[in-house]
Amino acid sequence: MISATFARYAARLTYEELTPQAIVAAKRVLLDWLGNVYAGVLTETGRTLAAVMLEVGGNREATLIGFGVRSSVLNAALVNGACCHIVEFDDVYRDAIYHPGAPTIAAALATGEKCRASGRELIAAIVAGYEVGTRIAEAVSPSHYKYWHTTGTVGTFGAAAAAGNLLKLDAEQMGWALGNAGTQAAGLWQFNEDGQMMSKPLHPGRAASSGVLSALLARRGFNGATRILEGAKGFCAATAAQWNFDRVLATLGRQYNVERTSFKAYASCSHTHSSIDAALALAAENGLQPSDVEKIRVRTYSIACEVAGNAAPKTTEQAKFSIAYCVAAALTFGRANPAEFAQKCVEDPAMQALVQRVELVADSELTALAPARRPAIVEVTTKSGKLFTGRRDFRRGDPENPPSQQALEGKFRDLSRLPEESALRLIQKVNGLEQVEDVNSLV
Image 1 (cartoon, helix red, strand yellow):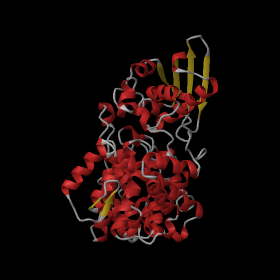
Image 2 (cartoon, rainbow, N blue to C red; image 1 turned 90 degrees about the vertical axis):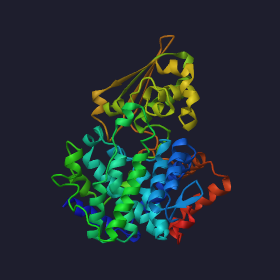
Image 3 (cartoon, rainbow, N blue to C red; image 1 turned 90 degrees about the horizontal axis):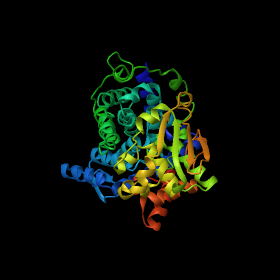
Image 4 (spheres, rainbow, N blue to C red; image 1 turned 120 degrees about the vertical axis):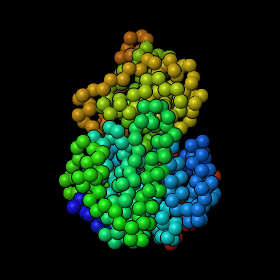
């Protein structure tokens, strides 16, 4: 049984059986997650979520990171998971179009604080959540992604696996946790159709909280569907036109997907990144300036056009899901960090004019290469009639082009905006996480 296989794996995984590479990978995704959470705390969306959860109240079990307060484990998981996803800079598992860190680590850290877990136990829980979540996400992709935001839906399973591992659930209890997680899984793409993006980070936040709740209930004997994934009225049947677990189960316990996670290099939807890479390279290699540009043609895979095809973004949130804006920002600023998506940048008349010169095309040959590759071809025609063409198949931050540890720590510093002494102390704690006796000391 598929669900039972995942339950047994998540329940039994321990730090001692992990490879050195998986341990390092878990610490890298944790550091990246923390930076994104601190960045989300500074936003209106993050502040609103925190205010509501604090209004609701709860036992002081876990930290609302960046707010300097503690609340219930469920509230902390929700706020931290949501904040991680707000600025669109969090990690992504390419083969499934899934952001594993936001829900998984939020659930793991909040639960770890509640049960005073060690750093080694936290590492194992993170890996358990990543391995379960990424494989379920890959098995239902790409058809699930048509209507469902995978990070919100599948993230619930990853969160339950991580929390359940920390709570020392046995295989039967873990199966119940996954069953109750699956029945709570939610997250629809309609927010993108409406251009209302504040609900997007709610998806991983709710997934983290629901996953923790599922694990806590299971520990008390609260049972759930034991065939939640493969059942006739289960998660896959309800949310995916096609699904197949053969390949993903074949590697379970043999390779660690946490090692194959991509780190974002830009503060926008990951479907925009190949186009940004190509545009940045063209500008650097040819000295292109926005004033030189007559028109830009971007060819890429179809899902990128569907999700990030906004041709006339008016807000920060819409710009992050606009390949046209991202390419224009790359050519204008030479980067695509959070500052480049500020409302004043989006509204700038020169930026709006450049965005209107971008044509987006779904290319069938490039579509056939996804999701293993995320190709984009950017063609810039200058006012003098010259044509410059650039292509990228792998994005900065993908497993084929991973960030150095120095770069990852620099990204954390930039996102967190912590005083240098505080940033260095937290970086050192994460890098030495296996030596931490109680994860409460992290935050």
